[in-house]
Length: 97
Image 1 (cartoon, helix red, strand yellow):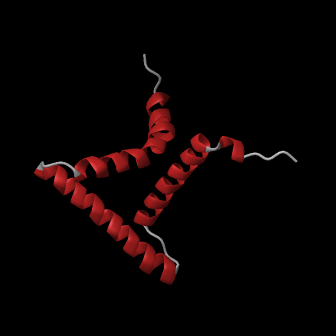
Image 2: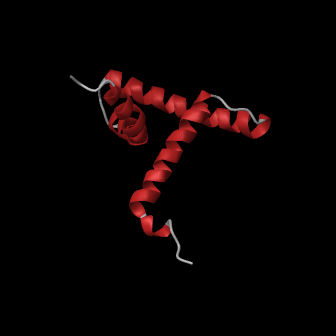
């Protein structure tokens, strides 16, 4: 019997940290594809990024409001930054006094 908490652990702890890299891989691979469906996925992803930029510029910067696009993008940027800090320079995280 499989542990019923395995899926929750895997999806919430591991996949959540991989999503930014998977999104970047999807963007790059779909940008170079010739298949129509994959090109539509590329255009859709670009449209979501543009909508997020507009939301950030208009809703957040001018009115102080947020939405799901800004939240999703911010969480994925935080995951990218956290993994970069963890893997690239762990010795910079702690300083001896």
